[in-house]
Length: 425
Image 1: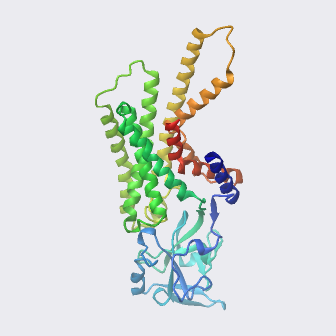
Image 2: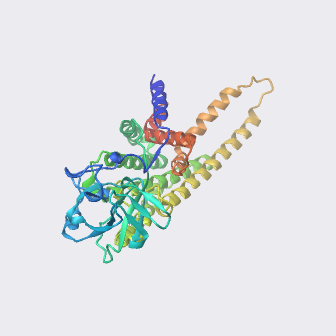
Image 3: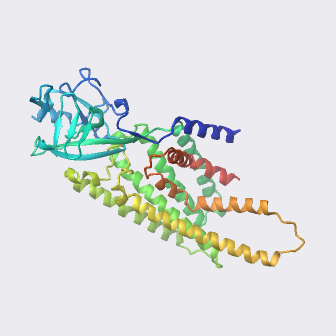
């Protein structure tokens, strides 16, 4: 019955969401945080200026904590009217509509002769002949520049992820299920070996990563947004390292004749994982603090606390601080999985030579099924499935690809349920 309900949920999710991305032509209702009484979605630029507000700068009332600074300055824009004349538009005389970041935004700096700004809010970018409506971009006046308004900085909204229904509920149940195997391994003495301790450490990192993600999505950590983003990145990286350690332990246990464990082996693994995880964390903290004043390097930022409190995962620059590193770790897990499966096959082949009987009735279906279950368990324990999460970050405009992306996301949101069921059976 539970399996039928889960399958029904997947079918409904896929039927309703044929895509996982939405482009910037969607309605601004998804991106509007606060609209003043004097400002609505139909107002033109002469009445309402849209400014981008990072998640970490949002206030409880929906505004931005740098709005007062804008009102105290004399920043102005030159807009083109219907009769082709121009007029100066001052920030401190207008209502500011605060809009958040999308999943993918491109920051560009434009000089006066590189764009034309119209009264209705549309902006024309001369270099690539792009015409953006007021919903497709926002101004980023967070920094006060010496050359403003000779140069303006705007964010071009590219696309945003669609919300999969039931994600929060599925993640909440999965978080509870993570606690069960951790409790079993900590309470049962025989399971508190090196492999068991590594497995608990890995599950603990996954648990904290998804817990922070869920709290972030529910907007319950805006007061310490950047801090939670750094913590989430640290445990996310530690998860992949623990998966590498588990893969190595499992491969060593299966292939080695001597099963004795070193007295301080888990301590060595812990120092390796937590120590290595600090290195990329320190790098992204330095990137954020050293480059935060230079918007020309903005597209290289990890962007902790901008769209969400976590690091930006879908930008091409994320290859430097996320996707590239995590793909290397996933490749190591895949190699260890391949070596382990080859050794198991080789061992079973050698055993079958000694146990083969000519009059024995073949049981191919049973053996194949048992092999499949065993390989799937090893596949899950070694964390090879996490490579799929990195694969789905690649954007393809195809419905079959979008369905695959939804399936993988649902799978990993409910991974705790699968781990709990695997431990039970």
